[in-house]
Amino acid sequence: MPISSPLDSAVSLRLRAELSRPPAEDNHYTSKYIDQRRFRRVRLEPRQSTVVRFRLGMDDLSFYDARMRRVAEPGGFRVMTGGSSRDVQEARFQLTTRDGQPVPVPERCGTARLP
Image (cartoon, rainbow, N blue to C red; front, side, top):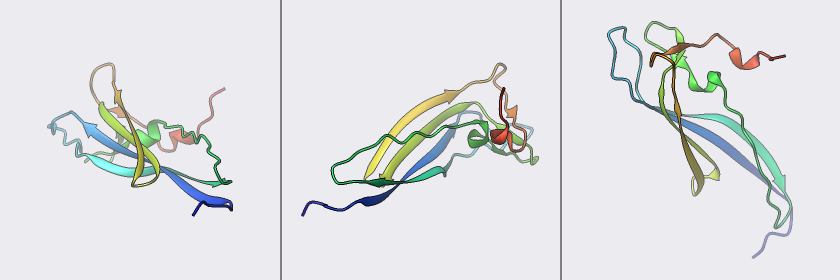
């Protein structure tokens, strides 16, 4: 039966780090993780579609290492978006740094506004 009334739907963005660095002597935490990073609710009319955009920043790519420093480590990341586990789209990207080492990420850097 076709849907004839508006539908509220949720779209989420999950991020999986596929960090390539082996455990280092300075005990950087390098295990893989998956986490929901963004969530947006949308209302769609019957037969309507829409584009939902999410912006990722260094806050999204960072975590606390074994020394409780907030860092972003170079390596691969997989982004998964969708409204359900049956409707997932994926993309991959690489985070690189000049020297291949983790980058310190200040607290709340995602809230800073650039001029």
